[in-house]
Each structure stands twice: as structure tokens, then as C-alpha cells.
Amino acid sequence: MFFLRGVIFATQHRLTYVMTSEEFKSEVLPIKNKLYRFALRLLGDPEEAQDIVQEIFLRLWTKRDKLGEYRNIEAFSMTMTRNLCLDKLKSPAIRNKKLDDTREMPDNRTPYTSTETIDTMRLVKMAMDALPEQQRMVIQLRDVEECDFDEIAEITGLSLNNVRVSLSRARKKVRDTLIKINNYEFSQN
Image (cartoon, rainbow, N blue to C red; front, side):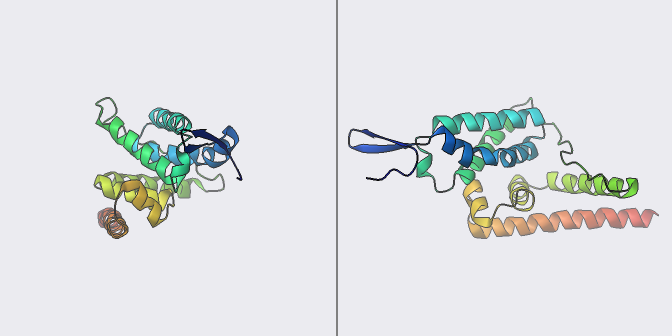
């Protein structure tokens, strides 16, 4: 019998695979930033997002003997993150917090272009925040986190067709909102 990785325990006619710490570091830890960005987008609070990610890693570590059963650990982790964030959002303490700008601007921009980019990002975030929860989650996963459709379907529990429809509707609403705002600004000048 070959054992390519991990530790395998035999208990009462059942083999159990347990992920080693090195495998955990190489397979699970690299998704930390993606989980953080996703949690931050859903919660809007950097400290709460860090707490969620820490909780996810703790849960993954304690379930390391069952991680071999999952086809995609990243999608499983994103699903856990989504569920924990939604539970956290139900608590009154975090319900009304806003997302701070977490992206740094390149240093080679002029003040004008930096201000314009920041304003545009603020408007896009505002338009995304106005979306229904499902559309907001799908557009975040696809356009910000760059997940493929299969991963999004697995994370959200939606069918591939529903993911595509939700993404299309979300993008259209964001685009229409930005066009409406820009048309209003131009008509005022």
C-alpha cells in the first residue's frame, strides 16, 4: 500500500487520512488573502474579517482528517467564510458598518487620476452595496476574487445557470447605476 502524503490511521476497518501541518501550510494557507477579502467585502470591518479568517483556519485545522473528502478545499473554505459572515451580519453589532477602501493606489498616478479612480471605486462599491445579497456575493466572487463559475456555484449553492444570471443582472445594475450617476453629473455641469 502506498501513502503519498499525510498520515493514515486505521480504526475499526476504516482508513482515515489526516493532513500534515506541511500539507496544510502548502494547500490551505495560500487562500488566506482571498478569504480575508471576501469576508471584508461581506462584513465591511477589517478586524471582524480577520477574526472570521482565523476562525476558518481553526475549523479547517480541526477538520484536517476530513479535508480529503472535499473536492475543492478553497471552495469549501469560501463557503464556510460566507456562512460565518452571514451569521455575523445577523448580529446587531456589525449590521451597519461600511467597507473601507482596502486597495492601495499605485504611486505613479497624478493626484487628478488618483482622485478620479478613488471616486469611481467608491461609486462602484456603492452600486454593489445596493445589490441584493445573492447578486452582491456573485459579483464579488467573480469580478473581485476571480473565481470560476463552478467554484461560485459550489460556494453559493446556486446552479451554474443561476450564477450566470445573477452575475449578468448584477453587472447590469452596477453599469446602469454608474451611467445614471455620470449622466446626472454631466447634466449639472
